[in-house]
Image (cartoon, rainbow, N blue to C red; front, side, top):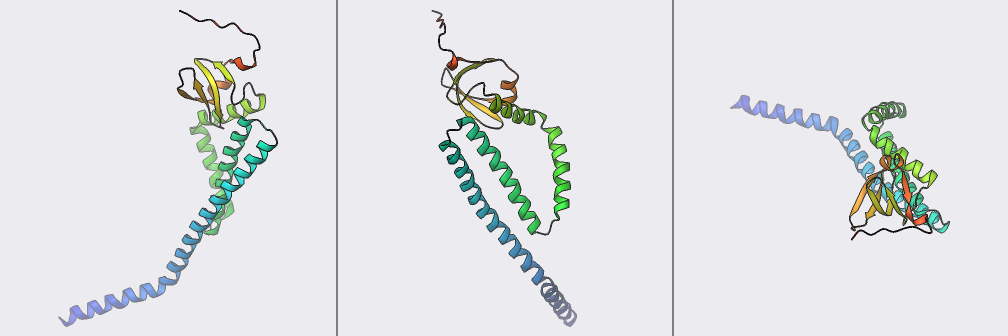
Length: 192
């Protein structure tokens, strides 16, 4: 019985010593996590405000709606990456390590998502050459309808039967696009 009491005392003192040794480090880590969460929440609000401000400025400057949507989504992604990068450096991660990680991840993701990168490149090409704008009635491949949204990944098309098609930009950029809205006179054929 005496031996069990001594073992319990020694276990108690070892735990007490352990917590007294590591409690400051755990407290410091806890404060860093809380600060990182606060920075993320605050950064998210700032990003939303900034993207909204840029979109409104572009609308006042009469920029094409597709360009506004594309710029907003691309800007949002870049700003979130910068926010996470900033939080990681706050935790003591070195910038060179993050740069090496981003480089390696970029090559890996680039190889894995060749189709996704083709969609982004297709979106950029659509915004540069502007074969259509938001609101135009277009026909390409098996799709025919009104353009509702152009993002950096895909384009939303409201089809004639009122269904909504999400078409990858790589498909659109590699297909012949007929912009029916820009044709002044056209022949309309109805099968009965």
